[in-house]
Length: 112
Image (tube, rainbow, N blue to C red; front, side, top):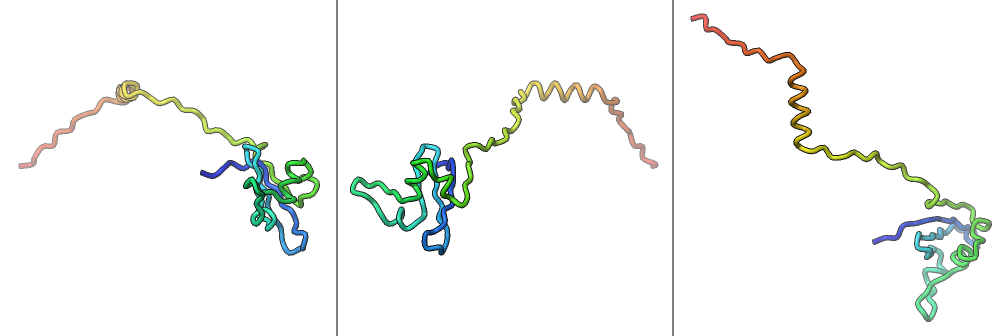
């Protein structure tokens, strides 16, 4: 199961050859796709890089070339529609049949 992303920062590579994305998840944890984060693990099994440290220190917005905050976006909610009971469907159908003109039966006569 993947985690929900709260915010994304794009940092320029220090070598100038590309960019790296640093993610902050809804639970507060972070990850990055730079070599520093992907290749280094400390003795306790934790990862960090200068990009994730800047997120935790609150300086990422000033250092990043771009940022997108998913947590602040409001998702439009679908309207709630109450289910219709079968008995209500039947009575609505009968009411609509009663409002229409009566059905006439046509008898065909053979010309024999």
